[in-house]
Amino acid sequence: MALDAESRLDSVSSARASTAKTANGAPQRLVYLLSRYPAISHTFLLNEIKELRKQGFSVEVASINQSDRLSSMSAIEVEEAEKTFYIKSRGAVRAAITATKTLFLRPLVVIRGLHAALTLGRWDLYATLYAFFYFAEALVLGDWMRSRGHRHLHIHFCGSVATVGMIASIAWGFSYSLTVHGPDEFYDVEKFYLRQKIEHAKFILCISEFCRSQLMRVSAPEHWDKMHVVRLGIDPKVFFPALKESKQEHMLEILCVGRLVPAKGQLILLHACDLLLSQGYSLRVRFVGDGPDRIHLEEFVKQKGIAAVFEGAKSHEETRRLLSHADIFALASFAEGVPVALMEAMAMEIPCVSTRIAGIPELIRDGLDGLLVSASSTEELASALGRLVEAPMLRRSLGVAGCKRVLGLYNLPQNVGALARVFRENAPNNL
Image (cartoon, rainbow, N blue to C red):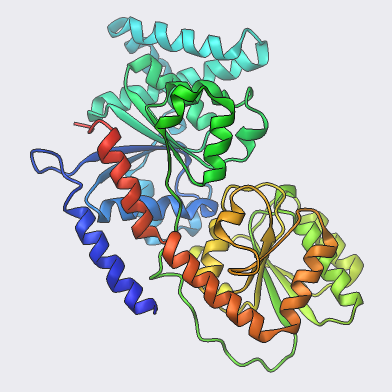
């Protein structure tokens, strides 16, 4: 099944590549603005950019921050880092030179950008200070875009990176588009200037129907037509069902991949495992990822005597290897967009348990492609995990169905093809 999918997707990529051309036959040029690139927790961005290039686009990347893992990057990440324009790495002196040059040569750019920044600050001292920093970064970004001949910017995520992009767009007069993930900006619309970003964007890509609904909730109907649902995806050539090794032990392994932060609900997962252990089940839980909650989770594990392994942050390939040994994948999140980690596990035919929140029910249909439980419910999560531990055939059927679901709706080449169509139809080509 995986080989058939590969050959089909290869032909899709070839067809897309032939259409990602401008009228004179040159590749359509795009520029991405990201907060940090490459980033271990956002490998899907690297994969998206690579796939766009396979489909005939020329993509340049600007990043606010440099990668935080220079010593452990793969060869492809090193290559990407060398080609990326890093805004903060220009330093304060260069930023000041850029601002001075722009003030003398293009005073209207400075006036428009400064007005936009101060308006966002709403004359609150703290917010205005941050807005001024965003304005300085926006001048550096816009100057680089002008020098490279770019006149449209695409931004992933709606946080400060999109604030910089929006100010740059207003100041320099080019257009921008957004890929919105959620969920933070849905909870604090004013802090993230979400309404303003929607209004100023030329078009918006939403990773789920739920995501689009939240943007529609806070925006005027005249902006709804600019919102397009384009789902994320995984590469079926990388994540595919692996042959399971026969285990000498009877202990099943539950794997959880994600940053160790409260929103991911890892403590609820440990509470559920503790409940299962008290009922006589034999299992081990393995965490892939790092974060500020690690020390508290390790203390809980030690206190309760739970068999748990904390792997820390791992590369894409290391994560795939750990997935190949897992029996069950669990993500007890309180807040999410649509987790790529779930897609990767499903593509490898690992039965998944997650929470009934945000865009997750669009990925997993409860009882068909996996199991969904109420967020925060230790009892429901323990019950769902217990069902899978007790029923090998259920694990198998959900794993197979989950893989089919991802290949059909969340595969990377197919969905980047949809992304490419939106770019071709809506984004002015960067000259």
